[in-house]
Length: 254
Image (spheres, rainbow, N blue to C red):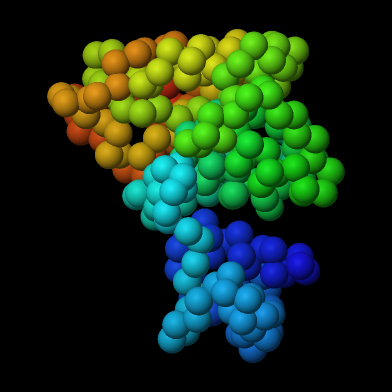
């Protein structure tokens, strides 16, 4: 697969649908060149062509992790692009296993020479083959529903790192209890990643902010003032105290 094919496929899979003219602008080539490049991708069924645009054919079936990646897809793509804008070539980072974090990994395919520590097999596979990257898979035994590792080896690998950023996600957010996860192992991994990172970027879409009815109940460690929260829009005012304690970034405002 050529670099152009790889970049087109990654962009369309990240966003779901992208026009031919927009792809031409992104890659700085003509519309006709885009049509020529994508022809074999369409013939192989990796993309679907509609009038003036290309549509992802990425599976939304099992495992559940892939299905979650199609929930609030536009919001997660906007967040991912915003987070990627904070990361420079040569930076080092830890990334957890959330679906929003997976979108971030796809957006980071445009970066080079990254050092990445992750407990997600999906994220590791996305970034391991990029030129100059060093990717460390934390863990040996993977969960079957999302390909994430939480065994002793995962914590040992993370503890041995020292990185610029921890990129994390949350299952839900409560105005008083903060960022929440479903499982204790997810909280523990988040804490481990935060401890070896100079700062944390919490990537979470607006649907996770719930004043009531949040099913996740385990608290992720509180963020520090120098940390950032990236969301696709500003949540309700009831979350102001929580969000004003960090750097809040609205991914849709550029």
